[in-house]
Image 1 (cartoon, rainbow over the protein chains, first blue to last red):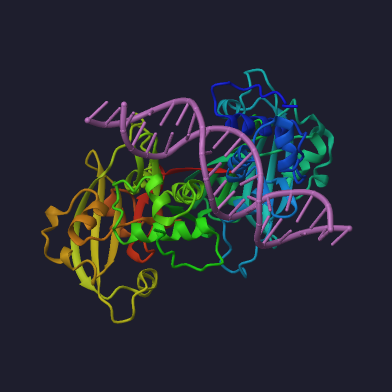
Image 2 (image 1 turned 90 degrees about the horizontal axis):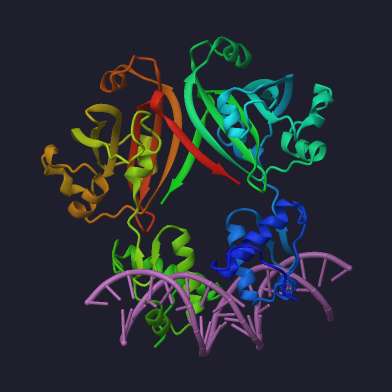
Length: 244
Length: 244
DNA sequence: CAGTGGTCTAGACCACTCT
DNA sequence: GAGTGGTCTAGACCACTGT
């Protein structure tokens, strides 16, 4: 009855189970938002004690991949980037509620990405990239602008969709149009001064401080799927962290 | 044999154990860097199963308060702020190793702290604060400057120590001189432009972008012990986060 | 009510560290 | 070798969710 656990036999059982679960999420067998089998079922399927199953699930829960709900089941978590990103540019005026800024794709092109983008997306020198220029607004005010690079191979479907039909949130859009799921991301934050183009788009003075956020977004199998650079006025920027 | 667990009886055992452990850390009974009793001893002392002890310890480990070491024991973690803070201002030139910047206290004064500091330190309107002006350098180059506010009551010992005798790292210094232990902190990051004083101290142009980090540091019992504002040139600033 | 995850127990054996 | 934390098992009972 016990299913095969392909990973290294020397590893602890619960780690091998975690890898197996992660693979089932990455492959789409366990779908984002959907439930995974119950602990009792997994116990039967893998032939291990329920405590071991629980420990494997625990690690994925603390990694943010799964979500438990007592009495209902355990679910594949759908990561919520847009709001997490927004925390950076906190509107001082707002009532404190979460607002998702509008997103408008201004331009699209097919080109060879520059070297640092190639590296982030792990593309070889000849690979083509799909580039999107995008503006994010709240209440009609430009908050930040974005340059997005996608590996052409996986995102061909986006090539012919009219720009007006791009959704406000891109990650669900990637999922519905291209079957590509974003699972996690790494961001690097730095500060620079606005160039002419950025200043014009954001309605700020050229040379005034801007925050730059570089994001590489990964799929469940940790393949890089998107590289994104965002520019926002530094004035509205506040970021909070807890250390221990 | 079972020790008393003062916290709410309706809470799960492992959470009440965690609270009890946290209290023993906060009180100094379990000292930073030192070992806590073995799991077997705790099992006897509290009269619960070892698995429950382990779960309580697990939560404190993932909170960063404890650290396990197989075969040796479990230890109270001494948080390592200085290096974590440094990650922000990463030297592009360096070899990638961790360097602790030198810290030099330039001035000290006793004054009523401004309102936002009072609030952060939870001081009443009449309370006095000890203020330190400090410069942090790497290889003799100023990296950032700091303004530090301490509640006078707990830090009186610092009042008469010659400024040259302040250590490079303040948190161990607080511990040895005043018996005050820092356990965690919250930081807020924002961007501004250098005023005349900051520009001069950092050797940058007035008006150029600077990163401001506001930190409130807490003791193990979550009492605010230090408020600190740091200014650094935005050019050398890079901060990395992982989202999921 | 049946089914889910949450808590708790008791004990076996393993892997590592120190002396 | 003695003692520590790490892994794994097996099973009992509780709390919550949906029907």
